Length: 353
Ligand SMILES: NC(=O)c1ccc[n+]([C@@H]2O[C@H](COP(=O)([O-])OP(=O)(O)OC[C@H]3O[C@@H](n4cnc5c(N)ncnc54)[C@H](OP(=O)(O)O)[C@@H]3O)[C@@H](O)[C@H]2O)c1
Ligand SMILES: [Zn+2]
Ligand SMILES: [Zn+2]
Image (cartoon, rainbow, N blue to C red; front, side, top):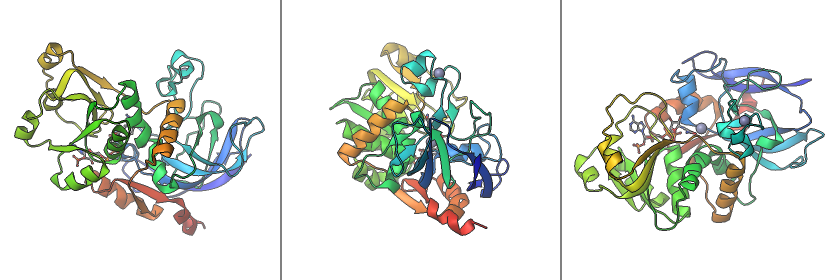
């Protein structure tokens, strides 16, 4: 059995998103059915719709999902009807490979099942994301949202939050460490808040001088304008960890100069070839590392949500209605968002026919 659901989809690559009817499965034994209240808009949604990444169409994006449980399968133990819950970028994984056993489902050796742009492991149907009324997800991939957090501004924690939390934890950031973040967007502003929450001294690298006041309000102690070579040179050998959220091709060399002995730059944004030649000398001479990181495991995501609940950390959001999604993508391309769009899913109702 299935339930008819309304969502918003891109019918083909680069096509505007529009109302789209599809079916959600009835809950299997371990499934939770969720009425979606809010869904954040991630630059990854845009990469898929705009053809920067391979995608399956029609594509219903959205992986920063907040909602309430409406039905549970008969084997579900963690959730009950009415609970406030979240779903992030993954809805399944093999559960038996080494990474899965370690709680690193995002690195599943068989490939995790993405919330959208994937196929279900059991019935091979396409997965559809959070720009929709409902979603049905195995309870293993459903998160509890701490009471007290504003639900609208908690939505971006499910991707922007965990994607920046995971490297902060893996590189064991602690009080007094020098952390820098490249790019003040959805991921970047969460990285500042979370690094600050862990007690780090936080610096923002940005191309946008007009973001300085916001960066400081969000918790940054310093801002460096990355297009100003003098400012970059003045910060050589300073940072223990740099989280690089830039979505497009850029030159890493100037940032590597700013790492301290044993420092690491972690790429979470751009996927692909960086054509500029990499100077290995600064890496060799000061044991510096270049690394990458993708989202975070389910247990780590719950840890991040609980940390945010305890410290009152959420995203700065601009609420939009679903019919404004195409315009929101255009604004995101121009880095014109403070600092995450979140769709109020109640706005889908007027598109019901
Ligand atoms: N690894 C993962 O698991 C993961 C998870 C989620 C998202 N992502 C990826 O992370 C990237 C960032 O996502 P987001 O949602 O935070 O995007 P976003 O809100 O658009 O923010 C990106 C920021 O990067 C800077 N920027 C944009 N274009 C740039 C360019 N050409 N050169 C230099 N800087 C540029 C801008 O900051 P300034 O104006 O301050 O310079 C912009 O605000 C995307 O590529 C997304 O797909 C990865
Ligand atoms: Zn995302
Ligand atoms: Zn696995």
